[in-house]
Length: 171
Image (cartoon, rainbow, N blue to C red; front, side):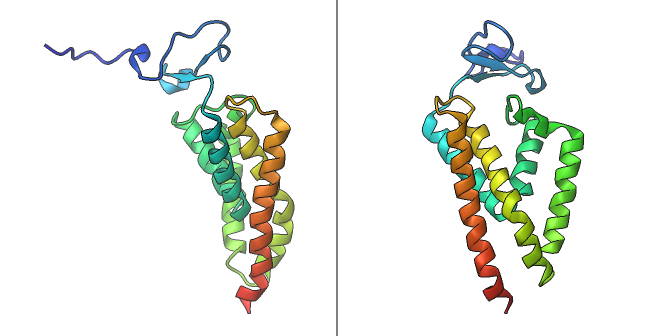
């Protein structure tokens, strides 16, 4: 007869015994995620594609991908390592939500949207850099500066395209 007991954390497909200090070794454990274990490394291609997607989204709106990653981390869907786990803190989520609302409203007013794009010229590439560096830092052997540069280029390029098209679209 099949067992009706809940599966133990070690029965998850990607689980492996953790050893060493918490958060170190081949498997990191997050207590907020009901004891599930996470692999210490991910496929580098997956990390790069994820980082590029998040950085690209940051090029359109800096706060949405940061807010989504923070909320998913808060709900235990994503495991965020330090220092990126600070995105799950309540004050950070509230500030990101308020900044998203301000940017959303500013984007709807002609003239104000162009001023907002000037302000976002610094913010969007910085958000892309954080997201790309965080994605590559999950378990690839790439140095952090590679993620920062790739995030700045990706988010900055998408932002520049959006900002250049804005005057034409507003006419």
